[in-house]
View: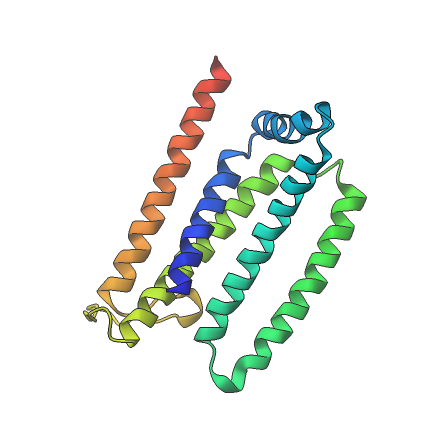
Length: 189
């Protein structure tokens, strides 16, 4: 169930990133949220906004680590710790590079690529989540005609997992297409 909640959060964040991948919209968003707080000299509002942004990220991280922890065998739990340490090292490196070269990083491309990575993670997690529910006996298991199992991608040889992944991917692609189409129409005006 945690994996399925994580899928909803990932899908929302991925769509949000894709929807705000246009520099003009991102600038308007920042000006609207932060600029209004600074103009009114309401630092409590700005502090609350900053806290909520950081809290949301921490909540997502805990949610995803919990989902991964439930899927990991007892003997392999240390791999989660090593993964977290590797993630901190990678984040440190990326933060250093971002601060050093932030003027040269195209925000639009960064958001667009991030949304696609998040979409991939959502598809993986929904496959793992449905599979876990099947293992718990809460959902039926209908074998898929071809044996197709790639555990690290969340692909299992059941019709339910593959259909859920296809539906989620199709839904997100439709949302991305509609968002891109709407943004193109707005840019033309």
